[in-house]
Image (cartoon, rainbow, N blue to C red; front, side, top):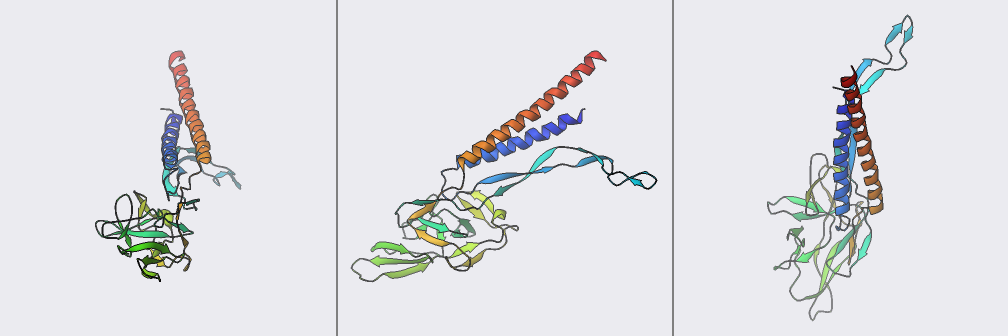
Length: 262
């Protein structure tokens, strides 16, 4: 079997994966707090016919080797944690992180998950929770029933104004978490990430301090997907896919010629 067939086959597989990653980015262009992904490619093993630096004659070495590649593969999908744009909403429970850091929420099994999506709501007990699944923001903060307004400072201090009161009352302090390698976090859907051995353990601190981002109330962080860039990447992947297909077609014609004329 001609090796170019298998080499081009790996190229087709790799570009299919790349297009899947691009399509997921485009599909989440409107998802609050979404971070785009990119496919990471790697060339495969080489068949070494002649080794560079090998002895070719007395006192003479080969300046170049003869190595035949075996194609390519996608080895990783890397999350890009660049800052998204600010979307002003004027909703008191919409919170944006301006800078590095994550909100921490408690999963049903008691483990922690992390998110950049600050679209929060209140549950029946007045706790601040995620809107889609109702996961409780950590540390748990309860808003009194008679609160007429909610204020969140840039440091994450939450205060409310109670009915009939003249002064605001502090009800809690948001905790922020960050990781040495955010790209190592495991995306589990629902705008959530979980800790892995590659991400490192969470580094907790106060917003606006300890190298963490500031909290902006009444705003949300939009997806960091650049649709124009993704469409350009899509066109590039399509063309590479077509070129690999043409290689397979060319090899097929060569083999057909050999079988029909020899």
